[in-house]
Image (cartoon, rainbow, N blue to C red; front, side, top):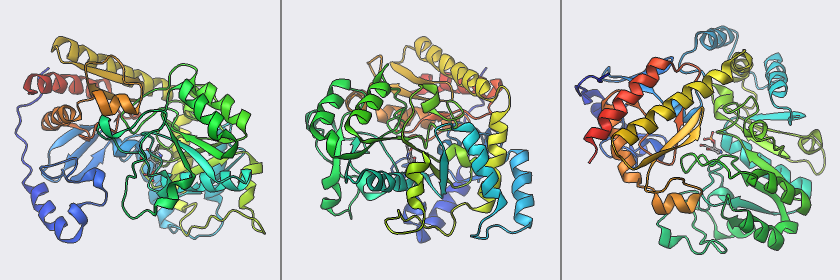
Length: 446
Ligand SMILES: Cc1ncc(COP(=O)(O)O)c(C=O)c1O
């Protein structure tokens, strides 16, 4: 199957960019949508339905970015549209107790067995921020361990080595260079952060021996999702669980990306490792802004009002529309076959892409499985960690490849650090379009 010849016009997107640049920094609201990723200017999207989106010039794409993973049921799912429209007619939000948040919490707990209690936030960043505060209060310790290349939102202490860098800047793995991701953070913020390479049991044992007793928590993405898609080595998460328990540090799984995607409760279920706290976001809200912290009552109850409480306020916490969407979303995900379909569609896309690269003799691998994966242009047969990603992945080639795909009607971010997302709305025909477009993009790749 050949995709149509490139006939896209982007006149309207260009006009919107000129206007946007007068009011918005770089014309966007997040650097992940701006010039760093789209040197020729972003494509302005206007409409989405199911697995497809349309831009301001009327070009149609199959969407595999899915709002950075938020759209687990694709765009404008009819049930979610009707839930939101109905709820909106009765008032958007009261910042008061509602039956909607009770229902959402009950649905959540049915899907996430580690959640004796849950607290809803507005974003994944807020959830990871709160999880750390809870862990510090619960253990009476200040330090925490984060891994190189893991991103946990834009809260100050997490912004160490969350971006990729040139290999010569990384320092030795046993004493990594500490590279802040942002200006404006007082250096002392990082005094309590222990930094270690991920997916390396020996490094973990070493760092836990040295710092374990001082750590309030170890926070980890269970699949590394912000250097593409890097699954844990066999037994790694289990060893992480054992060591955190041994040293009395809480294990926080940041399941903002993986939660409700790989299995109902995410990677903790898929890999059979129960964290102390977990954070969720993205797919939980099916397109609405939300985050959540889940765990034992003994820890979450520290937010109860009184002396020594852990403070967590928020006008929009438990937003009524979002809570309604969560209940309906989790209902849809509980339907027989939902996860089977997510995995089967993703595996078909992965197999098809691997076949394209083999046929076209392009040195590229597809890493991940089922509902989330990433393509790496590399000579290696696996990317195991942040250092592999920084050293062996040709991210510029990936960006060129994705720009070719965009012209053939496949929507994806050209940033190699993100990942391809499958929703319940994707079909076999979408996968066929992807494979045909990838074939052509490979032929055009220089
Ligand atoms: C693993 C992880 N944690 C936390 C966050 C922050 O979530 P949000 O963008 O909703 O603040 C992200 C966002 O991409 C993420 O990938």
